[in-house]
Image (cartoon, rainbow, N blue to C red; front, side):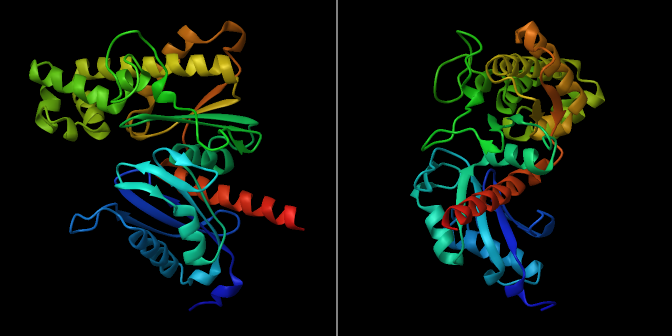
Length: 334
C-alpha cells in the first residue's frame, strides 16, 4: 500500500439513485480519489443487498489503495420515501427495499459516522458545494429524468422536513386534467413533462409516421426512447420530436417559475439526462415557460444554470453532507 491508510482521512459518497449504484472515495476537500460503479442488480438478477452495497464501497477503497479504517464518514443518496430522523429507507422500489435501516448498517459495518438523504437532495447539495451553485446563498435544483426530482439548499442546509425530504417538484399540479405520474393527481409536472411522458408522446409520433429517424433508432419501444435517442433523432431532422421536447421543457419552466415565486432562489440548477443530452434546446424551452409564470418582480432574481457535476453530483453531495453533519456533531461534543 502506498501509504498508511489509517493516517488518511477520506469520505465516501454513495449514490443509489438509478439502475446503477456508485461509491466514490473523496479526500477532505472532496477531490475524487477513486470510484466504483456497479449494476443495482447482480448478474443472477437478485436485487441489491446491503452486503453488495458494502462490497462496492470496499472495491472503491481498494482502487484508492485504502482500507476501511481510513473512512471518516459515509453519505448515501437514496431514492424513495425516507425517515431521516431514524436513517431508514421506508421504500425504494428500484432496490426492492422496505424499512431498511441503512444509516445504522453503514455506521456499524464501517465504524464511522453515516448519513442518508434523498438522492436529488444529495445532487443539489453537491452542486451547491462543488458545482454550479458554489457561492450562492440559496440553490434550487430541478432534475428532469424518468421522473422529475427537485431539491433546495438554503444557507448551507438542505431544505427538508423533520423526518422526511420534501420538494416533490414532480407533483406540482400544472393542469386539472392530463396524465398522472403513477400516483397523485392528474396534470402533474411529472405526468406531463418527465422523460417517460416525452417518450410516450414520441412513441405515438413514431407510430403515426411523423418521426422516421426515431423509428430507426428506437421504434415505438418506450424503454428504448431515452434521452440520447431523442437528441439524435432531433439532430437528424425529426421536427415533431423537437416540438415534443420543447413543450415538455416549457412545462418544467412553468413549474420552476412557480417555485421562484415561493422561494426566490439565487440560482436554479438543471440536471439529468434530458438536460445533458440537449442543453440548448431544453434550456430555451425552460426559459420560455419560466417567463410565463414568474412574477415580474422576481424575474431577474434567479440565474438558470446547467449542472456542472453531471452523474457525480449525488455522490459529491452525499459525501459533503455527511462531512458537514460530522463536523457539527463534533462541535456539539467539544
